[in-house]
Length: 341
Ligand code: CP3
Image (cartoon, rainbow, N blue to C red; front, top):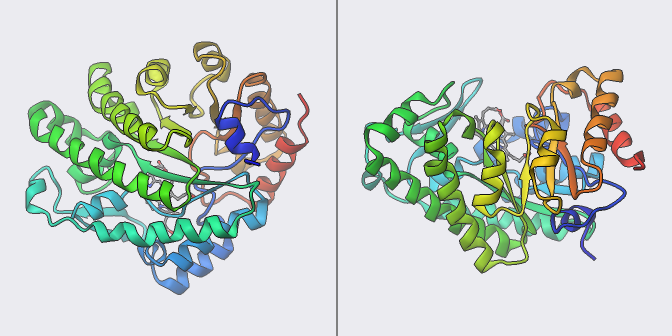
């Protein structure tokens, strides 16, 4: 029997909503901070499959979420494509050489980096009960390219956006390499036991409509087509954060099965705009989970009511913040799980 989350992603409308939270494994949990301190760093955790499996399972043990998302990162693909990857304390990720001034062909591919991640998926799937869905993920090509080109995070992604205009041929080569590597990596996760997958497109909001079609919709559609052919039973969630008014086109044109919606989107609007059978995931503001109280309860109920009658996965509009009190996560789960339509 598939769990509540997998059923919903396949289109079932259920009384009780499945719930998981983006970034549910991480720094708001003391048991995560302890293991991270012991292992010395984030990548040390990701590439140690016992540790990564343990971190993936920590929020499941504590809260019983309906989905367990693989503990890894979207930047494993650039690492496998041959860039050096470092997470420096307090600074976020660094990739070198950055592709604004180096070519892809100068890199030596390192596909072995995927192996421990597949091992993590196998270990987590073996440890989970049938009611919990194992979620794999990748970053979408545009979002991953912003890091590969710039070498680090950036506020408005202007280095990558400027390169896409100045040298679309070179930029397309980077996108194509990410597409190919992501297909391999996502297939590997599915073969290791991921039952549904999410495509994180955190920076899709920074593009003009034409560039959005070219660098978000088209490459995402290639990944979706190939994964669907190889693994027709695995639902694919697309999460184009910040896409706003471009969400309905993204939903139609990429072919994703389900759509993740951030907190800036009016749930009533997106409910009207999308086909009634399409599962939607979201979209509580993660900052409400820091403040808690009556506002949290009211906002959670607003999300539940807005998506009534369609397949809906309760989630945040983006990742949980590291300052979130655990008691507020517990309260949110009570609200979602005691909800009767
Ligand atoms: O959701 C989960 O719990 C699964 C694991 C996961 C991580 N990153 C773990 C992580 C997932 C799905 C991601 C996705 C990811 N990584 C995205 C897309 C989603 C989003 O949040 O927008 C992006 C843009 C990245 C790149 C990345 N990784 C950045 C910019 C940073 C540094 C900023 C930060 O939050 O620390 C990371 C590091 C990272 N990835 C951490 C975790 C738990 C923090 C590592 C630590 O210091 O312990």
